[in-house]
Image (cartoon, rainbow, N blue to C red):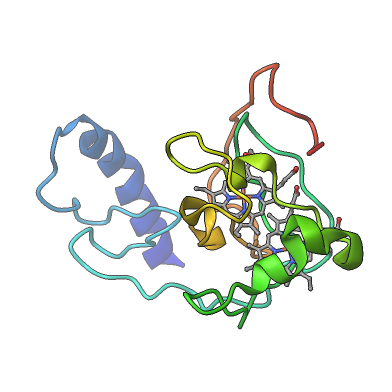
Length: 156
Ligand code: HEC
Ligand code: HEC
């Protein structure tokens, strides 16, 4: 308990100094933050293990224009490589009537020269470069970000 208190006090005093320093060579003694805990900047933390990701199939509102929607279901073990794309099994336009999944939008069929293709564009092939599943955890820091008026409240 005493130890914790000392750490907290030290952190409170060390923080402004850390913010003022342009390029701190290393963390001041006792520096702590929500993501790293008391681990010095030069050290490597052990991140908590991933649990089961959110799988409630409830599409989440987007936070800003052009945000790739987050994935409301588990994707563990889905094969996405040069031989096969499991996501397209449900999300390809021609599969969505059967699967009930939201079809990928037209942008996913346009190549970098603006040409509309009859198959998914290679630049949209690796879905998880942009779309991510969600972990059911509370954010470790506050966030007051607000989208603009043009942000779609929900996906179309
Ligand atoms: C077995 C079918 C299936 C597979 C495979 C699948 N999905 Fe889905 N996905 C769905 C369904 C169904 C929904 C819609 C949830 C709902 O509205 O009930 C969905 C929703 C989504 C959404 C949310 C879209 C939005 O507008 O909010 C994204 C993004 C997504 N999936 C990406 C992926 C990615 C990436 C993969 C591959 C790693 C994948 N899905 C594999 C069925 C699937
Ligand atoms: C380079 C980033 C990128 C990649 C790769 C990508 N997407 Fe997207 N995706 C987006 C963005 C941005 C949006 C929202 C704007 C739009 O529709 O273009 C989106 C929208 C979607 C939507 C919602 C469509 C709608 O009408 O609401 C689905 C479903 C989706 N993507 C699935 C996929 C799947 C499946 C793959 C892989 C085959 C994939 N995406 C690859 C960026 C990407």
